[in-house]
Image (cartoon, rainbow, N blue to C red; front, side, top):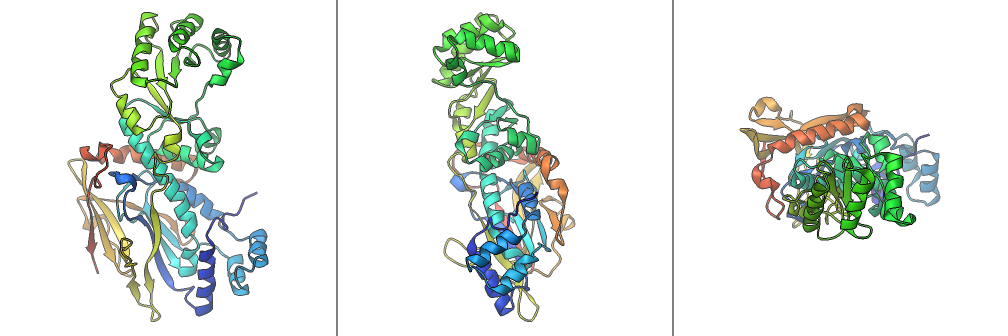
Length: 441
């Protein structure tokens, strides 16, 4: 049994629909674009995430009996609108940046083409998904860059709403994390899961040694023991005495981590547990991870910071009408001109110029809406950034589910290598590469 996603929207989308049906503009061919005017927090790049989830939820964007009854009972729209919504199916086309792709201010991340009625009702669904997931993915990317080759586990479910926690785990995985503690994310998206024990496990037992023995008996010596419930040095000594020098790992969740990690590594080596790995948690973010770069840490677990976008829980994306047909059937570009909120009208084709394997610029070619868009042929030095997700209402399933998630992760890890060195810094700055708009009209 599927659940409709049609009411995951704002009311004003339906009031615009009702008015457009009344004045005859509902069927007017239109082009909407989802983009970000700026990168949140002075970050140097963003990571697109959420597109696969959007496509799945788009399939269930249907107004069934319950949804229509709610709209009717609350007198939200008129009879003509109810009749239209009863048969609503998105029949337009959607193209945009692949999940895992890097984006910059003005990048045409998603382009939705169809009638005004077809496209306007998708605004909130598209923005709520991509704003959240891209914010998490961008934070996760910064953390994965700071971590280098050391693995990162996402463990922030307890710091997010239940459904956003699952989405956040997926976004973090796409942007370089290697595992999640969230089982639903593992089931739904094929993400490796991890988790051993919390402090309550140790507190449950009469002694730390009893807790460690019970965990070893259950999970074997390859497990990771949490050694900071009481005294860390004593905890490490007890862990090795119970498990032996083949213990898989210890986890530290408190203290001055660079100092503590060094002390624990020295103690483990003295005890002969030279292969036992050290995992640190404790409110990590990209800056804390970077500060541990020279410490003898083998893995990180990140919770609150990654699922909240490390201080920037939205990617500040917007969804704007950029082209439409006029009353005579001619295409015209349209754009918002408000101060600090201006947009670029017209349909767009985007390319990233690569020189010696490094991204140096983003070029966005703009047309009114009727001319054929540029292709890679016109930009031999550029990598085409847009793909087609939906064509005449038909969704490309390859971007969804486990397969789509894995593909997005692979794409991110590949295009991350194109970033210039200055993009890897964590300090606030201008975007790592400039975006140039070229008028093809």
